Length: 134
Image (cartoon, rainbow, N blue to C red):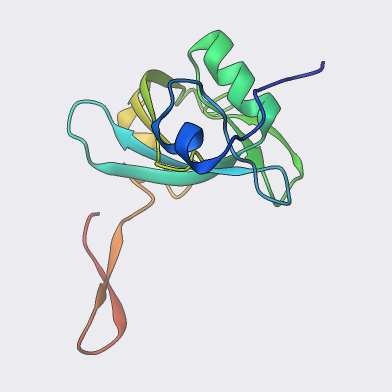
């Protein structure tokens, strides 16, 4: 499958234009920030290659690129915690996307069984991780 997106353009077109021109990094990836559509709360951060982004746009279900497995990953395919994409935003220079999603199993977003991958916060004074969400 050949996946094509428009090539990045000059700063004016890239930052102000209406054409979706994802700017993939040297590894062929863009960062994907994922939040809960209802609450706006953070769920996870992942990466997408052109195929993952294309499949997400085609199906409405979030697909990512697993850097550790070096393979396409349909979020929730085995766990049932599919992410239905409600909106996609792109940052100013189009090298990151923000997916607003609803989860088929909202209590199972993280592989640890939590509602979010961001279940700890950094105690800035002591520089220790402490629970923020169970």
